[in-house]
Length: 504
Ligand SMILES: Cc1cc2nc3c(=O)[nH]c(=O)nc-3n(C[C@H](O)[C@H](O)[C@H](O)COP(=O)(O)OP(=O)(O)OC[C@H]3O[C@@H](n4cnc5c(N)ncnc54)[C@H](O)[C@@H]3O)c2cc1C
Ligand code: SF4
Image (cartoon, rainbow, N blue to C red; front, side):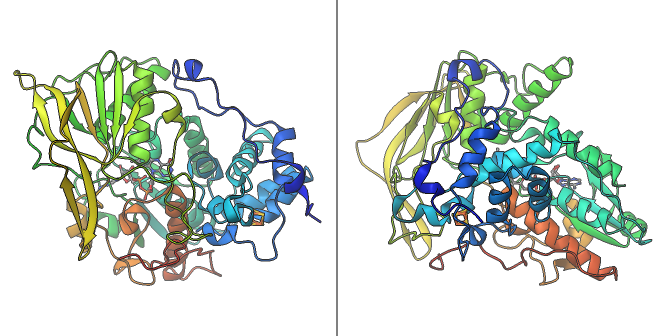
């Protein structure tokens, strides 16, 4: 029986982050482990609500009050089993998810402090490793059917694990040189150290999943060849087409880059250093990969921008500005706009924001300024207002508000326009829709025998949605192959995040 007064006795507490001067001198994760005493105390704050609204916030349907209570009572093995019943990779979501479950927690009503669900999750995930490792769960009987999964991000890996455990022979094809999708070279080590991915990949391999890296499907192997080798194909190629501003004067100057170009290069340097390999110092256009001593301007306000900020500080940038088109969001939930338990529009500060830099709101870049040699030296910004008219975004610059910010390196982190246009799409008979995503029928098929999941289907989203879609699409593949019984399907292709109103 959970403690109904736990939240009255204990305030919400998270483990202290590593001190800023220490953590920006390395690439290790920002949070140390919470320790058993703190996490059991925090799990005690869960009321085990009759209607646990936290469930509505989580697309995976994680059994949050169950494992909170198992942690409260120190029943770690059962907590590990309960968490893994709905989530293949809780060490990824526990570290990286923005936690829509916490936004939906009953304790958050009226500005209260929700249960630290995400921290409890990560501690359970780490307990699984500490208490005997991630044991493989191989299928008792092979089905004799085979599946190709294209893309090794969280959607592809979750689907691969579900299908392998159901007895199918699964091969994951990945064009990159290492597995993990955006988790490998997109997300920096200070948010997710890469041994977490390696450990899961080892578990999948022990469950029979085969991995082929360095294979660009559609180029190195055709759709026809893949379909001849396998009974079904699941595409989980992500949404990696970066949004750009080609019309802004100076966009082609040296030093102005897509954020992902810089992040991937920087994360590769860290990976190489960890393995004792030499790493590239400059990109093909001559721009140093290291921001040391440089003025950096990051354009955008989301995860990607915050990751660029953390990277810039660890590289020793002289100064960083992070620009956002929209005004500074409020600190508290606006109940009229985003009533509980929906995801609120509030000021989100990441650990990277504690580390330095200046956030500038309600500005738009008018020009990237040339230093006379073809290298950017500044950005010229104007204060702006943004409004929606007929579903279109209208940005208006305020006359006389222009100024320059110094910039040797500019990173565009303004979102993604869906999945990349690439040969594989046409070969499999799949097409990008108006949002750049690939539509799926209710049974997750984009074309006969070709399934789609994750960001490629949903558009750039979150790891928790990628895992949920990977699991659901795997269930559909299993049914298509005539597999025995059913696999869990937490979402369907039309499932949307919890919302009070339909947004235009
Ligand atoms: C910088 C950054 C930070 C982020 N931070 C967070 C965060 O903190 N929390 C969070 O929840 N989400 C975060 N996200 C979003 C999250 O990473 C994605 O939603 C998630 O990774 C999507 O998973 P996926 O499996 O659908 O695709 P991806 O992770 O994008 O994986 C797709 C894979 O497909 C491969 N591929 C593509 N085409 C082919 C081909 N033709 N042949 C073979 N392989 C191919 C790609 O190489 C890639 O490895 C972040 C995103 C970015 C860009
Ligand atoms: S809504 Fe919050 S308090 Fe209620 S069961 Fe979920 S985590 Fe516990």
